Length: 280
Image (tube, rainbow, N blue to C red; front, side, top):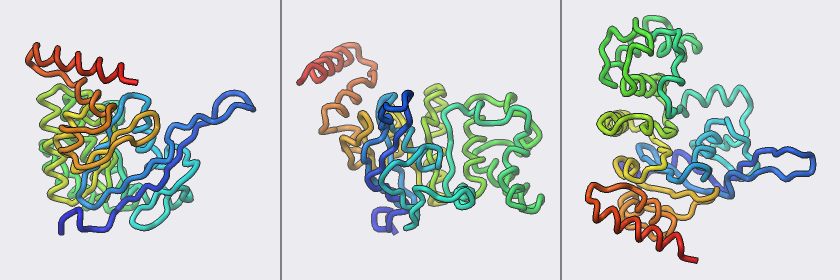
């Protein structure tokens, strides 16, 4: 069944996220202002915006790490906006995350084997079964079997991000929040990791919320794209359309910010971006 024909796995309705500010009379800072979208199984929604737009805050709200002040987050039909601590722990098996910095997200004192088996041993999975799952995941992300005995510092940035992806998949989640997962990598490594995300989705049917500031990166794997500006979604639609022929001036400026190899074309982009920025 095509992803577009399935019922949504995740539905976000009128989501509001607020943070307290200093001063007992001061109003809270509203980082996300009534945002709504959905994601279906085996689908990737790219969430695009500049720093401070609120895109990462939405990911944190899905993970229970940001305070939901209004609206609803429905996961498989269940309202998980404000779950109990016990239910939140249960949800970690179904909603996982891959962060931007692969090194800081891995415990430097633990071997890769211990890092990958930890989520399963916490759930009392037998050691043999956990190790079989780890071997399967290492093969999936293209790392050698002897990686289980090595420490994170012994791997390159791209390899560490592959380990972080393996850890996110260890409990067989249905949704993975990818928060700028390739922005710290060089271009050739970025492409390999993006190809890995696509391959894993085709194999497992996992859904992604892919958070990024780079339209070029999102164009590689997003089925649909939502563009955020100052806490609101200003444009949403088919991935190819939004990343190639955007209708909103802010999305157009983002597209024109992406560098191209031709100096003359790059200068034309700069001029067009200045024109859009100056538009009232």
